[in-house]
Length: 354
Image 1 (tube, one colour):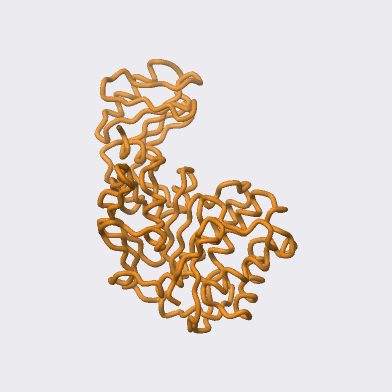
Image 2 (cartoon, rainbow, N blue to C red):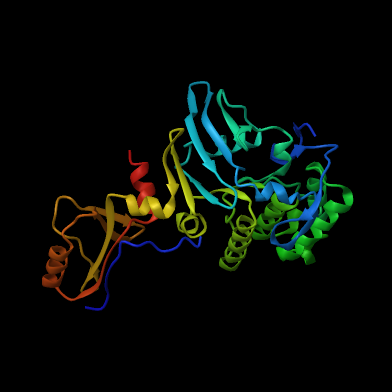
């Protein structure tokens, strides 16, 4: 028997008044004018005039959506969705296609007005002034393809209230951090998909947001870039930013996020700290390999999961492990036997089960 393990513990998650531009790329940025900003030190060592540290330090600061409802004709996009994210936390906001994720994020940013419900910041209804400090990275590209990279970041920094000098300083700092300094004078259209994604992230960060909304931020990034961006997000959270992060790459979400909210058919169906959700689950993940092949116990209470050709079982947390191990041993040489809390993918599959 080569590998046998059971665990009830969990691995650590490594885890101005605005008018939206009708002619901007995908309409994702707000037009802000006349904003007074305070000089401060922003996340990831990038100094940006306008970062006011006391907004990061307040433990009372929190972003929440409360009972949001939104319909498009007969289509229900949101049906009472609610969740909250605290400063210094990374929330994975997950759901199947069409579940309401993008609509909820656009409500937070003021791009969509909910039919009912509220978006709240620091215990009150969010204002356009609050949104000066929100950053958004959309799934769809939201950049001017023929504009040079540096000019673009300065432009969006100015739209978010920075002075020309402050926007230039922040732009140069983030270009260096994201490995884009040598591409500063290139047009966005001339960049690879991965580098365009870096520019999109820089646009979301250039004004030093206290709230960061990310929709599929790792799309198109190579593994090294994923590690780099993950480090940036963790640093931002360590310095007090509240981050909402949506992705279909659940392994990455599990590695990056401390908290999750799963939405399905417009309602949040599961929410909480990821480790706590795993611990409290009534189900456990059983992974057994006998004689080099996946092995499943012969019991009616087992659920067999085919995860892209890799099989494992889901059983109750009180399953008779000793009996199952004895049966596996009788079937042949046990190469692997693990019994542990469910993964995020397991939790997601259960939460949105039709």
